Image (cartoon, rainbow, N blue to C red; front, top):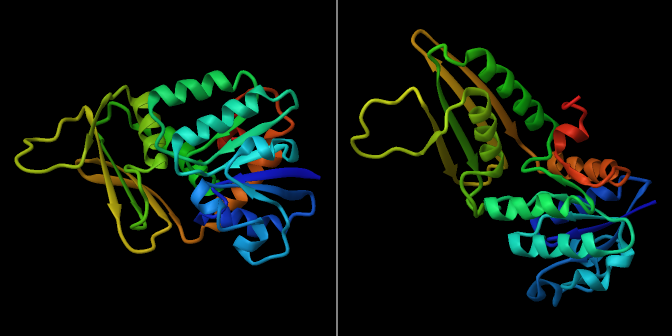
Length: 268
């Protein structure tokens, strides 16, 4: 039985992961981690999702670290995630982590890379199968269309409550585009007299509103034709299922930094 702790357990994703875990016979949620304010209101994960789940909720990972094999971390505070990884890396018992939190600085990413030398980590801005296939399709398209006169724009939309922009998924898409095309300049929105669009830039637009789970479109536009690659998420279940599958996968791996393409075998 794989023992999983969920950080950010009272949030949208944390709740959904806890709920869906009940459908897995080989997974047991054994702890929930939350900020001190949230942890004060719940004694167990079951109280959060209104199910019979006795896993304790705490603000301090060190209190329950012996109860878990893998930590799925969707905490909204990036520094809190790093603190959790430091604890997991220092533990004498084998631990692993799945990180769905986004908005890390480059400095924080470098620390995650260092910590991954001591434990296996899946770091994924988006855990759906469809989005990770989108990553591969964008990679292929950018490689084929490079230097063929196509302008590239990325448009994403999320619910009004999302705190970071652009989304972590959009950032990942831009990283892929930069690597495949060699274009370094990224323009985040446009306003006023901007002049003609340069062929050596990638445009990124972040839309926010309503209850949109997540939409990402990559546009390759040239004179006479346009190619659009789009993924639309209509349920958070796809991300929660992906996180649970990643937890199953990563626990048997050696220390290192992985992503969902590794989990799904798309990097092979």
